[in-house]
Structure formats: C-alpha cells, structure tokens
Length: 205
Image (tube, rainbow, N blue to C red; front, side, top):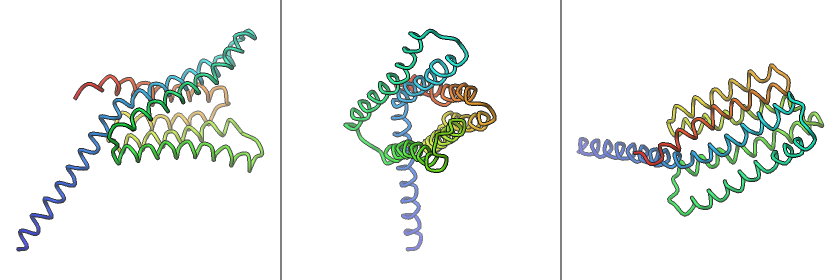
C-alpha cells in the first residue's frame, strides 16, 4: 500500500514538473514574438540617448536641427507606447500563461518604481539630480531584465541584465553627458541584440 502511495506521489511530482516545463516553454515561445517589443524599445532608447541626447551635447547643431531633435524626443516614446498598447491588446485574444502574466507585473512594477524614484528625489532634494537618476533607473531596468531572463531560463537575457547593471555602476563614475553614452550602449546590448535574435527564431521550433 505504501509503495502504491509513493508511486502516485512520484507521478504527481513528475506531472507537476512537466506542467511547469511546458509553461516555461510556452512563455519562451511567446517571448520570441514579444522580442519585437525588445527591438522597438531598445532602438527607441538607443536612438534617444545616443543620437538625440549624447551627440547634440558634443556637436554644434543648428536651431532647426535642435527643434527636430526635441520633437523626436517626444514622438519616438509616444509612438513606442502606442505600438506597445496595440500589441498587448492584440495578444490578449490569445492564451495567457501564469508566467506571462507574472512578467507583465514585473515590468509594470518597474515603471511604477521609476516614477517613485523621481518622486522621492523631489521630496528629498526638491529637484531631480540627473547624474544620480540615470544610474538608479538603469539598475531598476537591469533588475527587471535579469528577472525576466531568470524566469524564462534565457541566458542571453540574463547576461544582458547583468551587463546593464554593470554599465549603471560604470556610468555613476562619470558626468551626465557620458552617462547617456553608457545608457545607450546598455540598451543596445540588453534589448536590441537579444530582441533581434529572439524575433529571428519565432518561426523555429
């Protein structure tokens, strides 16, 4: 009798592990399609920090060019937000997994944390210290990326998150202008490159 119970418990544990593995695999397959979001936001912030913020501080630009730069600083994030909302609403029609929903909370929490960082700075310093803000925000993003990679067992994303965090530390030793360059590189490594690699594999088993 005890042997039968042990066998049943073993089968239940095995089945549970199989279910968990299947959930992870489904979420990983879905992430290959979601790689488009990594690509979109990776390029938006890479362009924002490198082309629209870092380079204008190093190169003398005309007033018309600067007006264009200021406009793109708003247009690009707004366009990315519109695309993201459209993509999420479109994906809601498909089956949702527990892991997928959990990851959504990770990224929603990231956004809320970034807002809180700015509010806390305003309460304590009565202003935004951008040289402090950028490394802290980078650490929060690094955390979200690493957690995402850890949950999905994607070493490439985990590595991207770790590098993002290390670049945040490195950026803290420099002035704001150089921090923008470090942040641009971080978005390229942690979002653009993994995003393209994942999205390229979306139709492969």
